[in-house]
Length: 166
Image 1 (cartoon, helix red, strand yellow):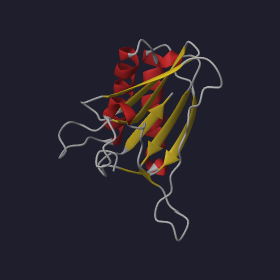
Image 2 (image 1 turned 60 degrees about the vertical axis):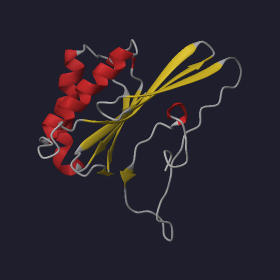
Image 3 (image 1 turned 180 degrees about the vertical axis):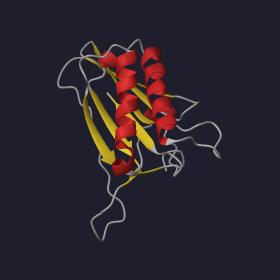
């Protein structure tokens, strides 16, 4: 939609598309949006995209403080016919988070909030926690970010997990 509407790359929103019933009838689509509006002082925003993964990167500077929001992080394998097990996808997802955070001079210790989406939360939550624990142990994270685990249908369908972070 945004491409067809002529929205330039710099104006693209950070976007995570999820299927999550129930959508209230008669609506076929519901949208949740966040707006960042500075009260006073300077404000700037940069948008980047990771060509390898399709992740949207938003870097805000408000009153001299930098804020980074990454959305749509998944751990799919490059081969669409072999997307990987849940544990493989979740490990790649955390590795991509680390790579993208480093790109902006940050690390997992700087993350304040995560939103974690799992295609089958009952089946995969233990594996997800194992991947997250491995990641935090590897990076020496002792203060865990606030986090929400949400079951949702992901796009593409072969994705078993996804994450946004701030």
